[in-house]
Every structure is written in C-alpha cells, then in structure tokens.
Amino acid sequence: MDPKEFIRKEIQAGKSQTEVAKKVGVSNATIYKILYMDTQLTMETIKKIARAYHKPFSFFVEEDGAEWIERGLSEKEKRFLAAFRSLDERRQERILETIEDMVLALRESHERGHPGNDSKGSNYG
Image (cartoon, rainbow, N blue to C red):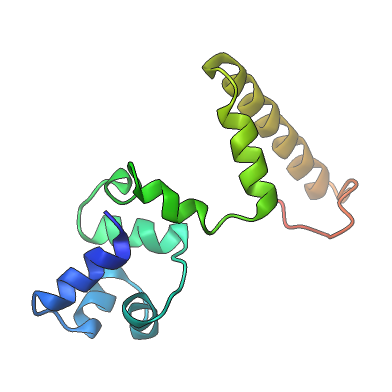
C-alpha cells in the first residue's frame, strides 16, 4: 500500500494531523506534505510509518508499491538497478558482496585519513 494513502486514511478515520505526526515521530509539516504536496517520501519516513503502525516495511513496498519508490531514484540508480535485476541470483549475491567489501575498504581508508579517490568528499558513514 502507498504510505501516503495509508496516512490519508488515518486522517479520514478521524485522527488529527498532529496525532499522526506524533505517532509516526515526524513533524506536522511532514504530515502536511504527505497529505497535500506531491513529495517523495524518504525510506526513513516510510520505516517510521511502518514501525508506528506495527506493519512490516514490505506492507508499503510490495507489488505496485515498488514503482513509486523507483520514481525517486536518480538515472544512475535506475541503470544500476536494471543491470542488477538482469543477473541471476548467484551473480547478484557476488555483486553485493563486492560492493560491501568496497564500501568497507573505503570507510576504513577514510577513517585512517585517506579518503581515496572520492573527489566530491562523500561521507562514507
């Protein structure tokens, strides 16, 4: 289910925006944006909604729900995801292990004061 629709239904059921914001652990402004603006929810906000209403994260992202998440991805992320999905499960697992190893090595290098080749100064943590 779309988490925005879920929040709308909570409001329609008689809860105030303030009550919903407090329960989810977000600001009233965030609830307002969910209800009235065409804004993309962050994964963290979706996780907060899921925890607050004792729903698994998958409740909000299964089937067609995954499409609205993909709308928030950059073109580079979409290309990566498409390439990843084209691989069989064994190769996907190898790719994930390689990426995890690379991220760990970059973090360790960064912590030692050697940020590597990252010219943008990204935060590895």
